[in-house]
Amino acid sequence: MFVLYLIVFVGLTGVGIIIPLFPFFGEQVGATPAQITMLMALFAAGQFVASPFWGWLSDRIGRRPVFVLTLAGGAASYIILGIAETVPALYLARVFGGLMAGNVPVAFAAAADMTAGEDRSKVMGRIGASFSLGFILGPAIGGFLAGSDPQATNFLLIAMAAGGMSLLALLLSILVFKESHPPSKRNSRPLDFGSSAIRRSFRFFGMPVIGALIVMNFIFIAAGAIIDSTFALYANKAHDLGPNAIGYLFTYMGVIMAGVQGGAIGPLTSRFGDIFVAQAGVALYLVGVALLIPASTFFGLLFALTFLTTGVALFVPSTSSLVSQNVPDSEQGAALGVFQAAGNLGRVITPMFSGVIFSAYGVTAPFYIAILFLLPALWLAQKTRSGIRIT
Image 1: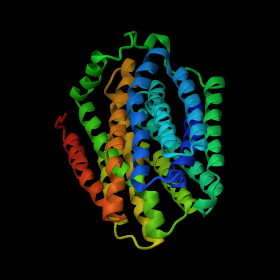
Image 2: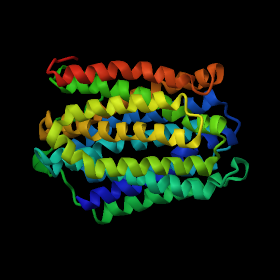
Image 3: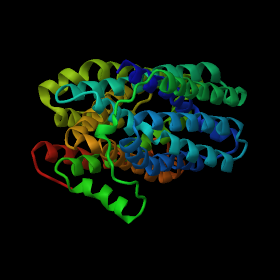
């Protein structure tokens, strides 16, 4: 299990290097705020398309080969990003990078392979903590390499650092990781990319608990994508923070996520249950977004981010655990792939307009839209917790 945590941590360190600084990659080639958020939507579109595929494929050929393929592709996407000199080149880099980043459900499926019952929530939390640790180290590396002046930043160096992390995770997958999904548990159904595959994906919506979780994940992540796609621009315009300071803010958020997911998820889910923890995550995230709107000082910003980040840290592993507990072993990858794809669809839709709202109505205007998204997610979590099936 430790090797899986290490692969996730190293791979997400590369992602963490890029995410806080990506708006500055866009500005370097003359992209507008609307184009920058659209680029983020394209990355999520790649994840949306690829997540179910990588999940289904891992159910059939194992988790390890999928890690190898996607990490190699991820390293290549960072090279394309580093040499991009036009907005269309950034489009290519982010779409391809999104396709390769669709391996998140495979990591959760591998964790599910190795655990059962009450231990699953705790292990899902530790996988989430490994993601978070990547977002501690990654933004710190990115912030250090970027400096305070976007005009003087060496973006090629930053992209190569991220690519190096993907290559290190690739080597760990090849040399150290032992396959967690043996042939005896694999799905023998032939791969099908036609209408029957789509129907099989949609049947998860009709399953008790699973359908509600998929819809909830879509809404929650759609709200989060509004924040993610505009936060660096907001922090720069409203608080005059440069690339390095923004990178260190993401490191601060990673510390919170790692602490909550690595130490608190297990005890909380054991005492209150996964769905209560998920509902608490939505509520805390909503409070954090609301606090961002009036934040006028750096410490006010940190206070808001503390609530917001704790909400994400609670929501992601608890809902992933619920999905894994409600499907058979042979469909872990597929179910988690559809679940992740729903979230990725949310990441596609809202960044398509968040940049326009940011430019037209002010730097905090997108946060009001995020709150409107979070309210139905909170209601849905309450209904699911009460045992009412909603699909």
